[in-house]
Length: 80
Figure: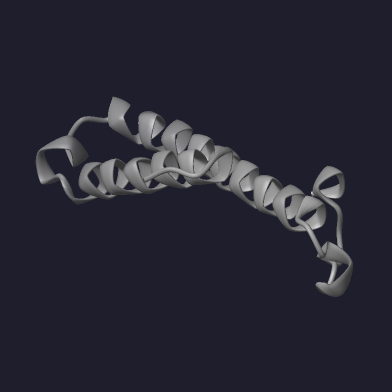
């Protein structure tokens, strides 16, 4: 059950990590030189997606009701 953009990002991030893990473990894929470049691009995309997850979470906790009672993050989402 999804509750918003953060859950959607987390779902895609988890799926991407699982797919990337399968690619890394594939012995047949390792023998194809072009796959090395693909792995680099895939890792960069996962990094960007992970960054978006963090930014989305930061926005969620700073806009949540009673957020003044919560400890604010040391950096804002725009600074990340």
